[in-house]
Length: 306
Image 1: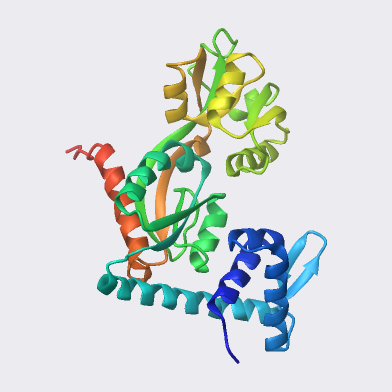
Image 2: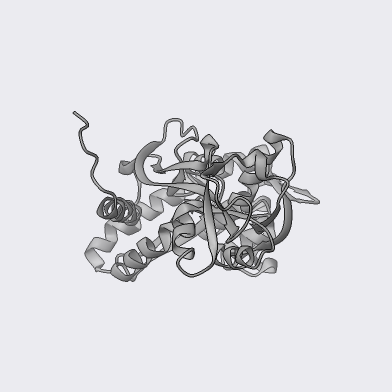
């Protein structure tokens, strides 16, 4: 029985995406070629690896077993490439980084631009997810580094303090809530909302909080960026919820006002999480160290209150 690393990587992409179509796209393969590779893999192993459903695919017991071994084999192959790269002088490859919406929009663009400029042969596969989903992916080895809210249970993962931010409500200048020092999320759910796309991690998180309160969010429009959200809030379409860092920068350009949210979940201590620094590939360790150094450069040192 022979295993092709390309097939194993494709299979993991399919399992992670829950779809052969999306898995093929992640692996940069045509759908027909990806489907043929999966069928050939199943034929060579003599067992079905995926259960096809109307909403996508899920791994069979044999598929779960293959995925577990594939992660180990691909990780070993990555480490082999890293070790040999020191001799060839062609250090490169990819790092898979998962982030919640807050860190992705407020902190990562500048941090990643510096890293990519300093390491032209290293690529970063960045994906937005909910914090609990990120923890699962890091724990099962399907991603290298995650950035999550400090409130999520990270289990046995190794964590590092990264940044602090909080979510705030933004309202147009002159809105009835503009003069409030703070407001509870439940008290603004009668307002029309401008939000991100329903598939975004933040919008799914807010939908969960609305369910806890027992009121739906009245989304008038869904957009793909905080900048666009703020512009429609300024125009009076509705109110929105964005990171405080975003609100503070946008209020310099637009007539919008941030209002603090009194809910405990609004405060966002962000953590970097990895299985273990020692098990990361060399390129992933470089990215981890870069993110930690970037955060340290802009975070004031804590003072001893004594």
